[in-house]
Amino acid sequence: MTSRPSLCARLVLCACLLIAFTSVPTLHAHANAVSTADARRAIQRAYDDASAAAARRDADGWLASKADTFVSVGLDGKEVNLATRRALLKMLLSTVKTVKAITTVRSLHFDSTAPNGAVIAVARIHEHVVMTFNRLNSKRVSTLVTDTDAESTWAVTASGWREVRCRSLREKGTLDGKPLAGVTR
Image 1 (cartoon, rainbow, N blue to C red):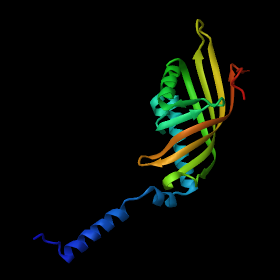
Image 2 (image 1 turned 60 degrees about the horizontal axis):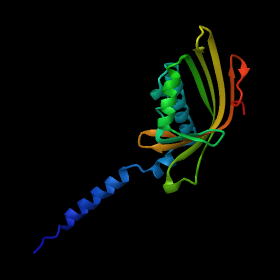
Image 3 (image 1 turned 180 degrees about the horizontal axis):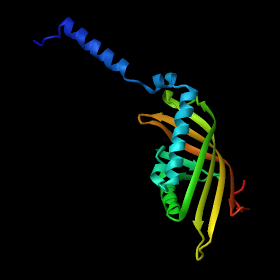
Image 4 (image 1 turned 45 degrees about the vertical axis):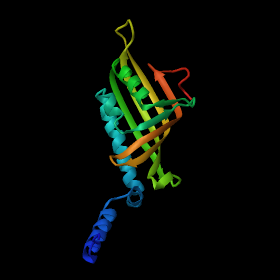
């Protein structure tokens, strides 16, 4: 004959399960607790941290706020994944002398169409980057300036806000003060 747990044991088990399930925050519950202002501050802080890493020419630090599934989409519609972007950035940073990047969140709203109640924020951003580098076969220092307006999608994860997608809306660039062909759009 199998013994059944006593009523007291069943109540204790139910109470433990109730406490366990109500104390674990879900993304949906987190969404209700996150204000637009809080999200904007957290995302701007991530961009500020990335700017500091850029100044140190630290590609991994510059990309630290990106999700593993991050994709950037250029004006031409071509997508670049995080691994490719990291490799290109490391190669670029190995050749530049200085980098100054400033990214500003211009607006932010929550996407209410996200699946499974995930917390998704969409930010309109402006990124201004100034890089100096030595010209090939010359001691002449050149300055590259880029300005990009983009729409950036962020998601709340277990480790905080992570950027999952960035789509360029407008790009403008100059090299030594002269417009770059094919970049200004």
